[in-house]
Amino acid sequence: MNITFRQMRYFIAVAEIRSISGGAASVGISQSAVTDAIRFIEAELGCEMFARHARGVILTREGQQFLRHARKIVDAMNDIRGGIAQNTDEVSGTLKVGATPTVTGYFLPDLLARYRQAFPSVKVAIVEEKSDYIEHMLVNGEIDLAILVVPGLTRPEALDHDVLLRSDMRVWMAPAHRLSDQESFSLAELADEPLIDINREELQLVSSAVWQRQPVHSRPAYRSASVEAIRGLVGTNAGLAILPDLLYRPWSLDGDRILAKRTRDQLPTFDIGLVWRRLTRQSEAATLFMEAARGKRVLR
Image 1 (tube, helix red, strand yellow):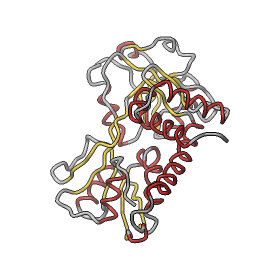
Image 2: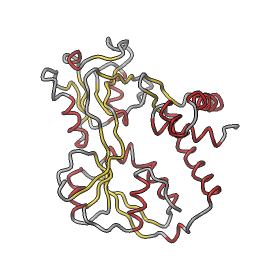
Image 3: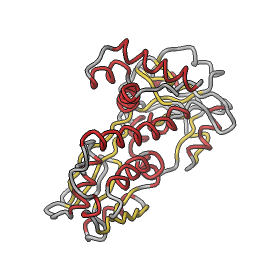
C-alpha cells in the first residue's frame, strides 16, 4: 500500500469538515491537491471513501472504516514526531460520562477510542440514559460530564455546555421516489407524503421543530426507535424521513440506496454538546476529556 501520511491527513480533514474545499482550507493546501489525494486513496483501496452531494461529502461505510485506521496512524506518527511530553500513566482515576443512546451510537465511540489511547490508565465509565436523568445525575455529582443533544437542557441554570457538532437535517428518500430527481423542495410539497418518524426522546425536540412553520402535514405513517428500521423503510420507498446528517448512511442493511435531500425551508440543526455542572472543579481526567471533545490536541 502506497498511501502516504500526508494523504491521510488530507482525508481526515475532509471527513471531519464534510467538505473538500473546507478540508483543503483547514490544512492550508489547494483543493485540487486534496481531491487528488482522495482519488489516490480510493484507487489504492478499490472503493469509494465519500458519497458526494451538492453541499459537500459524507463518508461511505468503507470511508468510516478507513477514517478510524487513519486517525490511529496519524496519532502514532505525531507521537513519534513530537515525543511523549508526559507519561500517560501519570493521568489516572475514574471518569464517568453520561450520554443518550443516539450519542453513544453515532458520536461517542471514536472520541472514547482516542481518549483511551492517550490515557490508558483512566477508567472511563459510560452511563447511557434519557437526557433528563443524565442531567439529574450531573447536578447531583453522580457523573463528571455528559454529551447530550442541545438545546433542550431542562436545567440550564445549573449546567453549562459547549456545542461540539451541528448536524443539518435532510429528507431521506428512495431513488424511486417521485421527488428524487429534484435538487430541493419545500416542506409544503411533502405535506401528503407518508412520513417515517423516529421515536427517540433526544430527537423529538428537533423533529417537532421541523414542522413548526408548516401547519399542514400528515401524521407519521410509521414510527420507530430504530434508525436501521427507518433506513429499511425509506430504502423500500415506504415513506420519507427527516433526520440529521449524523445518522445518514447511503444504504440500508438490505443494500437499498437512500438519498438525502435538502429543503428550501431553513430547518433546525441537530446539535450535540459537551455538558458539565457549573462551578465544579474538574479532575485532570475530566479536563483532558473536555479538551479532547472540543477538538483540541490532547497533551500527552
